[in-house]
Length: 170
Image 1 (tube, rainbow, N blue to C red):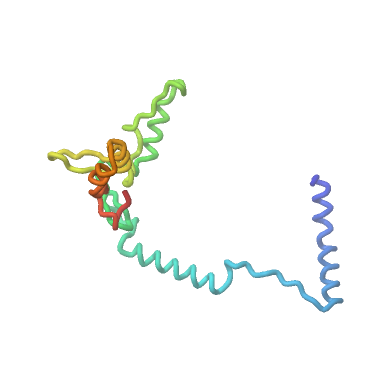
Image 2: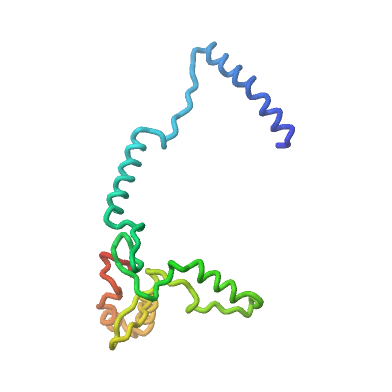
């Protein structure tokens, strides 16, 4: 529509509304707009129940209580010292600063410079040393190394999670 067509349509709306009301009066019918489903009583009650459920869940796990370390507020798993996602903005700014003056084709994104989230890094202690483990990569390597179905069954008989699956996902 052109600007003139929109203006004519807009200015004609009061006349159309008056004709519509007159025809409804003449025929004895009423046109009612359906109520938005989000304003129904049932929806409002369900929304309020959901809000109370969320408030109850956060009562003991408030994210606003200052703590010494990062943790998942729903399952209580504490982050290792290598997790730095709380400094993601500074890390991103550092990466952008290191890109200044570099050609895009020549720039290499280093894993060491990335923000590390609670879900990304899992660590295990091997001979007193903390070793970072990526469970998905470990699984892929184990499957690739298997030569037979029996070998795969023996390699995958152990759980590949740092935390029990009831409180974490691999």
